[in-house]
Length: 291
Length: 222
Image (cartoon, rainbow over all chains, first blue to last red):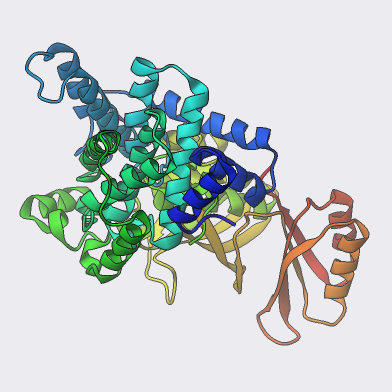
């Protein structure tokens, strides 16, 4: 049975003296009735699909509506040429570019890995791929980080939701950001409690984020929201490694996200009836797209 | 909702939407498998959000891609219309509001190369998962995630026993089983999900039985 609380995972980690990722791997083995090798192989192919998706971005593609495409290339160009000028610095700029590119690839009907959803597919690769390419080229550690991310996502899905239609964007980008923050903390050598606290902080920071897609499409503002999920994950991971903790326990943060989602007006839950979708510019775009 | 690890990290899919794109590919795929014939003509009705935002999400291309046998991660999905033309699959789309249907619903009326016909209503329920709600006018509920046997028979005593006996003889465990019919004594549909794959000879044997009109089998893991 999948874990329904981060505290449960932490307890198992401590009792059995195992890292977070190992506990999630073992849960997958029993849940899906597969061997350890089966599970690791499937995670490897998921990671490979993510790497391939990141490597095959096409800057000349435009989405169906014409609203999305090419920004990831602009950001990559800036990353390489604006080293002195950039506020975030080259490494973070690379993560931002990765988030934009994956979001655009998704909008342009390219192959991606939903993590946890297609609309939020840019966050996790945006933190993992640059880490792998520039900091530590260690596939085993990346797979471990993927298990950490998936375990966090499972708990959020069980306690709250990972669907924009159910809980707004906080459930999609918020969840993706929590998963990415936890994964980063594992890569940086944090323990199970630090992983949970990074996830909690990342989710807290995006609490209340509405799902208000222009013309109902996974384009505006979804692509750029992947960037806030990414940068938020990076900063929460760094805060945790600096010794900062979440004042609200991780499971309680997830429960708060559910409460906020439940109370969120339906116009802010993927219906394109509120927020950016009903701005004059959003409505214009919708008329152009839908005819 | 409890989800397995690879529902969270995954599916690997062609964008932009797990419900509007990946799920739509699966609907097309399952429909063509259930037709058990190469589809040459399909008339598709889109309902709800499939009708309003479907084109922007590539739902139309995704459905056709699935009918051509593609999986949700097939990079040829955006070119499915051209491929359909090449493969001799004629298609049409209509938007229509259906009564009491899930917001992401499609109805596909299929004709196969050898004259087989099928009408199927299915919904994309999120995360790329689907639910089949109607088969040839009979209300059903199944997801096609496990090996699934569908038996069409006259609504008379004895068919359930024959089918279950035949499966137990071959050590196939039934996970779920549901019976549907249009009216008492009329046309009935039996839907069984199994833990193991069903041997072809068992399916052929069932097809021979009097009163059984059609047997379909689908294992989407293949």
